[in-house]
Image (cartoon, rainbow, N blue to C red; front, side):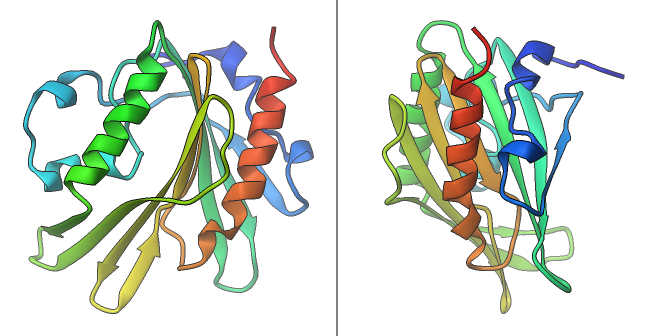
Length: 198
C-alpha cells in the first residue's frame, strides 16, 4: 500500500538518501504517513500528559497539505543502533509558522510531565527549547528526554522552517548523547531539500 493521508511522492523524492548522508547511515522511505495532530489541540485545554506527542515534536498542530518521512539508522557498534526520522511537511498559508509557535508555547507550559503506564510504572518527561543552529526562516532544537527509574532515553529534534515547509529531524529514543548526529543530519536534509524540486 502506498499513500495515506497527506502522502506525497514528489515530496518523498526530496528526503535525504544514503548518498547524501555520512557513511554508515541507512535510509528507509515511508510510503504511509501517520496523521498529524490537526487543529483540535490548539483550541482544547489538554492535560500535559495528553500532550506528550506534541511536546516531543512527534506530532505537530495543523494539517499538512503534503508529508513525506524516512527512518534513518546508524549502526554505531555492538548494542548501539542509533535511530531517527526525517519528516517533511508542507502547509497552506501560515501553517508551518503556527506549528512552530504552538510547539514553543506547549513546551513553555509543560516543561516536565510525569506519566504512568498500564503497569503503574512512572516516567518523567522533560522538554526544553535548547540552543541550536539558526537555520532557514526559523529553527528550533527541542531537547526531550524520558526517565524511568535509572533508564534514560532521548528524543531530541531539530525543526527548520523554509517558507511553508517544515524539515524535521528527530532521534527516536536513543541513549544520552544521541543528539550528536542531529546537526549533520539536518544539514544534509536541508541541502537535499533545497537542491531538489522546483
